[in-house]
Image 1 (cartoon, rainbow, N blue to C red):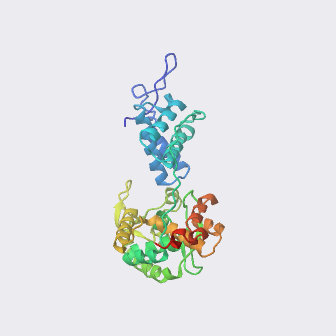
Image 2: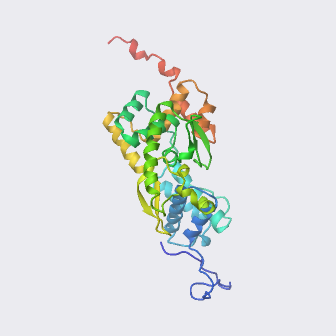
Image 3: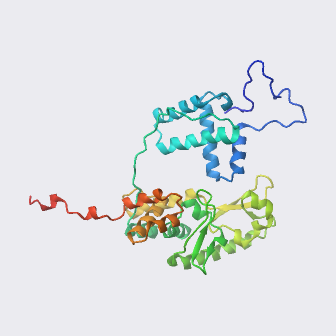
Length: 348
């Protein structure tokens, strides 16, 4: 994708200083994608949101032959979104995600009002029920997992975590005395607390003892730090060497910091856990297409089946809208499923 800076200027208008006529002392304006990243970080959106929005802005610009977005309007946005639905066959959620990214570009970055985007060819949004494992299936999958992956799987099911919420836990977020875990900056940048399963407590304590031994070895390097949010790095630079701020599930290898070159330790990469769960599902002989997120679906469904009210489940899952939680009411054991089929009354 070529560099996108100032858009073309119509005849008769005064052109702002460009690459050739910019004074030596005046800094060059940032690239379009860099502007998008800066606005996203200013609003403290997650890194995954940043990657997603930047990706959709790239696709939008490329679809229109690398024209600068300032030279386009709602007609171009409509054309792009309709192309996604008609030609690419994307889902309704994917099309909605693309629209959010493009509107963010115009409203937050370019500060250009393109008005209401009419006449979009809408992708169909099929109503899918989540895949849910039985308690026996969950036990079978966890039995096939080993070591740290088994502990992660236990917390995914026992707490209803999203995978990244679990992997981004810090030592300070675990409260053994009160029997709870605090999720910091979950989806929607919201905090919440969940129960610490009693069956996972002892293994989690043993795991943290092993992590602490590795941490104490890391401290022998005076430049060592755990990765921290940028704002905290500026306010409290010493926190990177504090035990409370270490990841509960640290990565096995460190990487050099981009600016200082000093060693940094991140959390375990999600892909390693995802592969382990996929292999465990296959080894256990389960025919359902289960993933890490299936553990969260199973957590919610089993709570409802146990008689807990839906508001409690909503709070534990961190859903803003109870309609999101309502999907699990469609997969719990229902009365209509206990109806005897008329076929069973036929004598063949």
